[in-house]
Length: 482
Image (tube, rainbow, N blue to C red; front, side, top):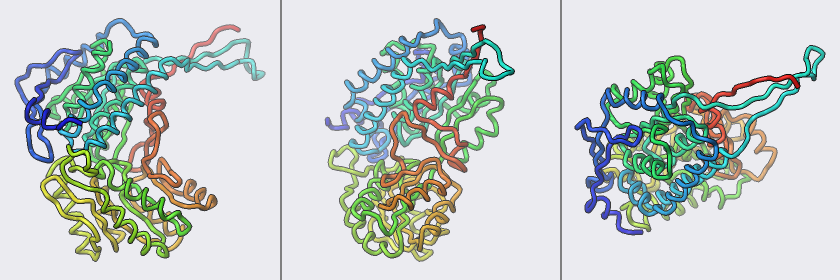
């Protein structure tokens, strides 16, 4: 891996919001700084109200409809180009997000899979046939189904996966044939713009995709509320997601919001596996995943030995300069977020919790933190802590574990570590979440499998390539004499 400073200091990127491939020229600039060292990574020319309206009108005007094969060819070419520029994208993700380069590289692999699976879906015939003579009330006809693209989609993405979250919304929409206006996080916009440029290079007709950065009132709010938009797909905070649901009007709304995911370790668990999953789940991506392990729930008879081993494992997660290939945990997204996480730890300690490892902050860098004796009503337990925090809580029995797991407002994912199939089935049935992974971290999935949560984690609508394509389409039926 080349030194990330080649991007940070020697080549400050100068990018712009893009409307159908053409840069805007509002004169307003957004500066993006490296969370680790404060260096300027790049600037983005932001959009104004006229640009937002222009993007909508350009997409609706459209152009020649893409065939299934043409959509396939663009997505397939894009994945090839992405792999060819793997190092460049990894450096850029690390520079603007503070994620360590190993995580950035891993993210590129995931985004590649999104493009691959979306391309594959373009080649599938997804229609169905219904015979109408199966009832005495029927007749000799057949009903056929086909899918049609929506007129226009808006995709609003967060900072924590600057590439993969964008790919997870844009690629399925394009596979469906639906034009997209992308609004990425203002904290990590550079990777998103580069990805859009890559799709143009892969042959995507420009009218199919625009990317806008700008003030909330002239970009996001307009896009969410405009009646010409058919669907808004949003990943981000609960507060913003609920505001979108309230103000979007008569259109589809896809919300992937927060998570407070438990890893539940039963008394019969493989302890080595439990320790490995807890560390990977809590500290990967600096803990900035909606599906990260936010709570480690351990049977009281196993807690002492688990904690001892877990602390030793956590020490292996080196933290510091994210551009150093040896670093396992980089920064969180900015210093303000790190200060918040530090306060969450301090509040838990004031309630009687004990920090066994980490807990210290330097700028946006927060040490991987192991904390025990955390009260069940502590802020870090009840709310989502988006960082490398690993609170350990004890439970008495399975009923207690299920109650504790279900006790928060969130319902995204969960992991259960057990060697007892009967116990595993009970958790699958009784946990109020969108995903239950047995002997795996809560966030495990592949890019085309259904993903999404309930309660404050979302409306129950699933994402993942296959489900997302459905969300960006509608089903048309027609019948004929047969």
